[in-house]
Image 1 (cartoon, rainbow, N blue to C red):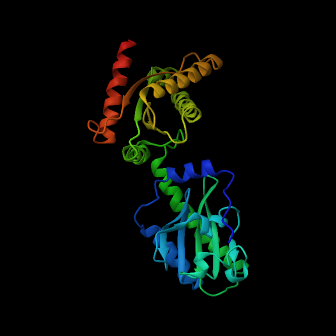
Image 2: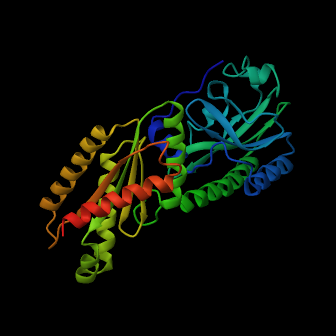
Image 3: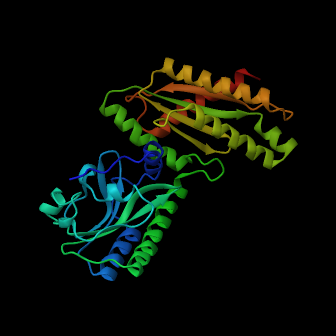
Length: 318
């Protein structure tokens, strides 16, 4: 058996997958409908919408297999996401990569596999795949039909992403932040790790809009978000909460460590202001609050404390 290789873009691929907040969620009719269509159109017993995370293949929609996931190292879809085209195995028993695979030797006894990679933002996150327990041929017409169904799955995944991403800055919006931050805090609680929230608010943003126009204001928001992307880690959760308000949740991070990161972010912003002369400087105020499980019963409570500290800092500048 050959285990699938790891894609070269694995870090960003996983980041995109996590941004969807779709892993380990309940079945949804919009995906169930598409796997039913695939099963019926191709006359197969098994059709799946699968997503590949660090170590497993998880089924967002599953017809014909009595499981919600399989290990990534034995998954067929782990191979499928390595290429751009439909991945086809006409007879697994004759293919040395899969002939001794547990999914071939044991239930569901896969004999035929065809999987079309699902792309979001250029990253292959999983597949729409069909499986059979007998060998099959798969012609060009079949390939195009599977691609058409996969593109419908991609549109549904993109719709999920749009609901959690800020369209202007291309980072999480408030809804996306709430979902991701909750997951991150739960992990910190289970592993007894510290976490710190930073609440940021741009200074003198309204005068920029009034003096230079809203297009210039949008440019400031985009610049601020881009600097956040460059400064914070992939494991940090950061977002534009709305207007000129931003937040960052740094997991497995002490207050002292968070202050070092914020100093780095401030230095990056200062360098930008020195390099780009626009008649104003991009400035901000912030509040840092350490997560306290006994005090902060929700993300909203943590944000409220951060907002209050940020406001105090902003008042001190006046």
